[in-house]
Amino acid sequence: MGPNTSSLALAHSSDSHEESGSQAVKVQLKLREMILAGDLKAGSRITELAIVDKLGVSRTPIRSALIRLEQEGLLQQMPSGGFAIRKFSEADVADAIELRGTVEGLAARLAAERGASADVLAQANQCLDEIDDLLSQSVLNEEAFSSYVRLNAQFHLLLGDLSASPVLQRELERVGSLPFASPSGFVGVQANTPKARDMLIVAQDQHRQVIEAITHREGARAESVMREHSRLAQRNLREAVHQTSNLPGVHLILPTS
Image (cartoon, rainbow, N blue to C red; front, side, top):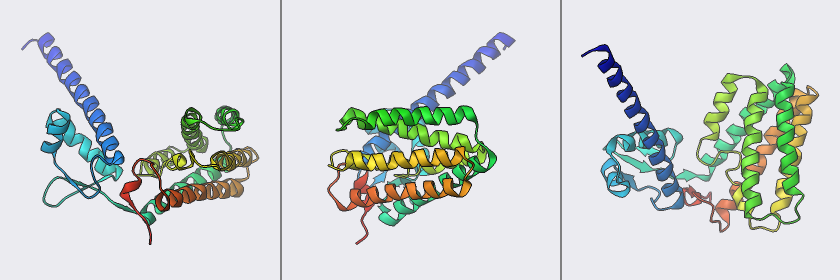
Protein backbone atom coordinates (compact mmCIF):
# COMPACT_ATOMS: atom_id res chain seq x y z
CA MET A 1 0.00 0.00 0.00
CA GLY A 2 1.47 3.38 -1.05
CA PRO A 3 1.70 6.42 1.20
CA ASN A 4 -1.38 8.06 -0.36
CA THR A 5 -3.46 4.92 0.18
CA SER A 6 -2.24 4.71 3.77
CA SER A 7 -3.17 8.36 4.41
CA LEU A 8 -6.63 7.81 2.94
CA ALA A 9 -7.14 4.77 5.16
CA LEU A 10 -6.13 6.72 8.26
CA ALA A 11 -8.41 9.61 7.31
CA HIS A 12 -11.32 7.21 6.74
CA SER A 13 -10.65 5.57 10.12
CA SER A 14 -10.59 8.98 11.83
CA ASP A 15 -13.84 10.04 10.13
CA SER A 16 -15.53 6.77 11.10
CA HIS A 17 -14.43 7.18 14.72
CA GLU A 18 -15.70 10.77 14.81
CA GLU A 19 -19.03 9.73 13.28
CA SER A 20 -19.39 6.91 15.81
CA GLY A 21 -18.67 9.32 18.68
CA SER A 22 -21.25 11.79 17.39
CA GLN A 23 -23.83 9.04 17.10
CA ALA A 24 -23.09 7.89 20.65
CA VAL A 25 -23.78 11.42 21.93
CA LYS A 26 -27.10 11.51 20.05
CA VAL A 27 -28.08 8.13 21.52
CA GLN A 28 -27.00 9.31 24.98
CA LEU A 29 -29.21 12.42 24.73
CA LYS A 30 -32.17 10.41 23.45
CA LEU A 31 -31.87 7.78 26.18
CA ARG A 32 -31.52 10.46 28.86
CA GLU A 33 -34.65 12.16 27.53
CA MET A 34 -36.55 8.84 27.59
CA ILE A 35 -35.45 8.09 31.16
CA LEU A 36 -36.33 11.52 32.51
CA ALA A 37 -39.68 11.52 30.69
CA GLY A 38 -40.58 8.16 32.24
CA ASP A 39 -40.64 6.27 28.91
CA LEU A 40 -38.06 3.97 30.52
CA LYS A 41 -39.14 3.19 34.08
CA ALA A 42 -37.01 3.48 37.21
CA GLY A 43 -35.56 0.12 38.17
CA SER A 44 -36.14 -1.41 34.74
CA ARG A 45 -33.30 -3.26 33.01
CA ILE A 46 -31.85 -1.97 29.72
CA THR A 47 -29.93 -4.10 27.27
CA GLU A 48 -28.07 -3.09 24.13
CA LEU A 49 -30.30 -5.26 21.94
CA ALA A 50 -33.48 -3.71 23.32
CA ILE A 51 -32.16 -0.21 22.52
CA VAL A 52 -31.12 -1.37 19.03
CA ASP A 53 -34.76 -2.31 18.43
CA LYS A 54 -36.06 0.98 19.91
CA LEU A 55 -33.71 3.40 18.19
CA GLY A 56 -32.62 1.49 15.11
CA VAL A 57 -28.88 2.16 15.53
CA SER A 58 -25.93 -0.20 15.85
CA ARG A 59 -24.72 -1.61 19.16
CA THR A 60 -21.40 0.28 19.25
CA PRO A 61 -22.79 3.81 19.85
CA ILE A 62 -25.43 2.34 22.18
CA ARG A 63 -22.75 0.67 24.29
CA SER A 64 -20.84 3.99 24.53
CA ALA A 65 -24.03 5.88 25.42
CA LEU A 66 -24.96 3.43 28.18
CA ILE A 67 -21.47 3.69 29.70
CA ARG A 68 -21.70 7.51 29.66
CA LEU A 69 -25.11 7.44 31.33
CA GLU A 70 -23.71 5.14 33.99
CA GLN A 71 -20.90 7.66 34.58
CA GLU A 72 -23.54 10.41 34.90
CA GLY A 73 -25.29 8.31 37.52
CA LEU A 74 -28.59 7.67 35.73
CA LEU A 75 -27.78 3.99 35.15
CA GLN A 76 -26.12 1.27 37.18
CA GLN A 77 -24.41 -1.78 35.71
CA MET A 78 -25.96 -5.12 36.65
CA PRO A 79 -23.80 -8.10 37.72
CA SER A 80 -25.73 -10.28 35.27
CA GLY A 81 -25.08 -7.89 32.39
CA GLY A 82 -26.85 -4.86 31.04
CA PHE A 83 -27.85 -1.77 32.95
CA ALA A 84 -30.74 -0.71 35.17
CA ILE A 85 -32.26 2.74 35.56
CA ARG A 86 -31.35 4.05 38.99
CA LYS A 87 -33.75 5.23 41.63
CA PHE A 88 -32.60 8.07 43.88
CA SER A 89 -33.52 8.81 47.43
CA GLU A 90 -34.36 12.38 48.27
CA ALA A 91 -31.26 12.36 50.50
CA ASP A 92 -29.07 11.33 47.52
CA VAL A 93 -30.20 14.33 45.51
CA ALA A 94 -29.96 16.68 48.50
CA ASP A 95 -26.36 15.51 49.05
CA ALA A 96 -25.51 16.16 45.38
CA ILE A 97 -26.91 19.71 45.63
CA GLU A 98 -25.01 20.25 48.90
CA LEU A 99 -21.81 19.08 47.22
CA ARG A 100 -22.32 21.55 44.37
CA GLY A 101 -22.87 24.36 46.91
CA THR A 102 -19.67 23.40 48.71
CA VAL A 103 -17.55 23.37 45.52
CA GLU A 104 -19.10 26.62 44.25
CA GLY A 105 -18.48 28.20 47.64
CA LEU A 106 -14.82 27.24 47.44
CA ALA A 107 -14.60 28.61 43.89
CA ALA A 108 -16.10 31.92 45.03
CA ARG A 109 -13.74 32.15 48.00
CA LEU A 110 -10.64 31.49 45.89
CA ALA A 111 -11.82 34.01 43.28
CA ALA A 112 -12.11 36.64 46.03
CA GLU A 113 -8.86 35.78 47.79
CA ARG A 114 -6.71 35.44 44.67
CA GLY A 115 -8.26 38.31 42.75
CA ALA A 116 -10.60 37.68 39.85
CA SER A 117 -10.16 38.60 36.20
CA ALA A 118 -11.75 41.98 35.42
CA ASP A 119 -12.86 40.63 32.05
CA VAL A 120 -14.66 37.63 33.57
CA LEU A 121 -16.21 39.84 36.25
CA ALA A 122 -17.54 42.08 33.47
CA GLN A 123 -19.03 39.03 31.72
CA ALA A 124 -20.67 37.89 34.97
CA ASN A 125 -22.16 41.34 35.57
CA GLN A 126 -23.43 41.47 31.99
CA CYS A 127 -25.09 38.08 32.50
CA LEU A 128 -26.74 39.34 35.70
CA ASP A 129 -27.93 42.49 33.92
CA GLU A 130 -29.72 40.26 31.40
CA ILE A 131 -31.33 38.30 34.25
CA ASP A 132 -32.44 41.60 35.82
CA ASP A 133 -34.12 42.53 32.52
CA LEU A 134 -36.01 39.22 32.57
CA LEU A 135 -37.12 39.64 36.17
CA SER A 136 -38.35 43.17 35.52
CA GLN A 137 -41.43 41.55 33.95
CA SER A 138 -44.33 41.32 36.40
CA VAL A 139 -45.23 37.83 35.13
CA LEU A 140 -42.79 35.29 33.72
CA ASN A 141 -43.92 33.18 30.78
CA GLU A 142 -42.40 29.90 29.57
CA GLU A 143 -39.97 31.70 27.26
CA ALA A 144 -38.74 33.87 30.14
CA PHE A 145 -38.14 30.80 32.30
CA SER A 146 -36.19 29.13 29.48
CA SER A 147 -34.05 32.26 29.14
CA TYR A 148 -33.49 32.30 32.89
CA VAL A 149 -32.30 28.69 32.88
CA ARG A 150 -29.82 29.49 30.07
CA LEU A 151 -28.48 32.63 31.76
CA ASN A 152 -28.34 30.98 35.17
CA ALA A 153 -26.24 28.14 33.74
CA GLN A 154 -23.97 30.72 32.08
CA PHE A 155 -23.49 32.60 35.35
CA HIS A 156 -22.54 29.44 37.27
CA LEU A 157 -20.00 28.55 34.55
CA LEU A 158 -18.50 32.03 34.85
CA LEU A 159 -18.23 31.52 38.61
CA GLY A 160 -15.92 28.59 37.89
CA ASP A 161 -13.92 30.76 35.48
CA LEU A 162 -13.55 33.43 38.19
CA SER A 163 -11.74 30.92 40.41
CA ALA A 164 -9.03 30.59 37.70
CA SER A 165 -8.58 27.02 38.93
CA PRO A 166 -8.73 24.28 36.27
CA VAL A 167 -9.10 21.73 39.10
CA LEU A 168 -12.20 23.45 40.49
CA GLN A 169 -13.62 24.05 37.02
CA ARG A 170 -13.40 20.31 36.29
CA GLU A 171 -15.03 19.51 39.63
CA LEU A 172 -17.84 22.00 39.00
CA GLU A 173 -18.47 20.44 35.60
CA ARG A 174 -18.49 16.97 37.14
CA VAL A 175 -20.77 17.77 40.07
CA GLY A 176 -23.10 19.80 37.83
CA SER A 177 -23.59 16.74 35.65
CA LEU A 178 -24.79 14.60 38.57
CA PRO A 179 -28.49 13.79 38.23
CA PHE A 180 -30.60 16.74 39.44
CA ALA A 181 -27.59 18.70 40.77
CA SER A 182 -27.26 21.29 38.00
CA PRO A 183 -27.76 24.95 39.00
CA SER A 184 -31.20 25.04 37.32
CA GLY A 185 -32.14 21.46 38.13
CA PHE A 186 -35.33 22.40 39.98
CA VAL A 187 -36.07 25.88 38.64
CA GLY A 188 -38.92 24.40 36.59
CA VAL A 189 -40.76 23.54 39.80
CA GLN A 190 -41.41 27.25 40.26
CA ALA A 191 -42.70 27.96 36.77
CA ASN A 192 -46.41 27.66 37.49
CA THR A 193 -46.51 28.89 41.07
CA PRO A 194 -47.55 32.35 42.30
CA LYS A 195 -44.19 32.84 44.03
CA ALA A 196 -42.16 31.90 40.93
CA ARG A 197 -40.74 35.35 40.24
CA ASP A 198 -40.13 36.05 43.96
CA MET A 199 -37.93 32.95 44.33
CA LEU A 200 -35.86 33.90 41.30
CA ILE A 201 -35.44 37.43 42.62
CA VAL A 202 -34.00 35.98 45.86
CA ALA A 203 -31.61 33.83 43.83
CA GLN A 204 -30.62 36.83 41.72
CA ASP A 205 -29.91 38.89 44.83
CA GLN A 206 -27.53 36.14 45.97
CA HIS A 207 -25.85 36.22 42.54
CA ARG A 208 -25.25 39.94 42.98
CA GLN A 209 -23.98 39.48 46.53
CA VAL A 210 -21.38 36.89 45.56
CA ILE A 211 -20.04 39.03 42.71
CA GLU A 212 -19.86 42.01 45.07
CA ALA A 213 -17.98 39.90 47.64
CA ILE A 214 -15.55 38.63 44.99
CA THR A 215 -14.97 42.17 43.71
CA HIS A 216 -14.19 43.43 47.23
CA ARG A 217 -11.93 40.42 47.98
CA GLU A 218 -14.24 39.14 50.77
CA GLY A 219 -13.55 35.42 50.57
CA ALA A 220 -15.51 34.19 53.60
CA ARG A 221 -18.58 36.18 52.59
CA ALA A 222 -18.42 34.94 48.98
CA GLU A 223 -18.23 31.33 50.14
CA SER A 224 -21.09 31.79 52.61
CA VAL A 225 -23.38 33.31 49.98
CA MET A 226 -22.87 30.39 47.58
CA ARG A 227 -23.47 27.84 50.32
CA GLU A 228 -26.71 29.65 51.15
CA HIS A 229 -27.56 29.78 47.44
CA SER A 230 -27.65 25.98 47.31
CA ARG A 231 -30.31 26.03 50.05
CA LEU A 232 -32.77 27.43 47.50
CA ALA A 233 -32.20 24.38 45.31
CA GLN A 234 -32.76 22.15 48.36
CA ARG A 235 -36.08 23.90 48.95
CA ASN A 236 -37.12 23.43 45.33
CA LEU A 237 -36.18 19.75 45.59
CA ARG A 238 -38.55 19.29 48.54
CA GLU A 239 -41.34 21.02 46.65
CA ALA A 240 -40.76 18.89 43.55
CA VAL A 241 -40.81 15.61 45.46
CA HIS A 242 -43.59 16.28 47.94
CA GLN A 243 -45.97 18.20 45.70
CA THR A 244 -47.43 17.35 42.32
CA SER A 245 -44.78 18.22 39.76
CA ASN A 246 -44.33 17.50 36.06
CA LEU A 247 -40.62 18.21 36.25
CA PRO A 248 -38.74 15.63 34.12
CA GLY A 249 -37.15 12.89 36.21
CA VAL A 250 -38.96 13.57 39.50
CA HIS A 251 -40.47 10.08 39.27
CA LEU A 252 -36.95 8.70 39.80
CA ILE A 253 -36.67 10.31 43.24
CA LEU A 254 -38.11 8.46 46.22
CA PRO A 255 -39.44 10.96 48.79
CA THR A 256 -38.33 10.76 52.39
CA SER A 257 -41.29 9.62 54.44
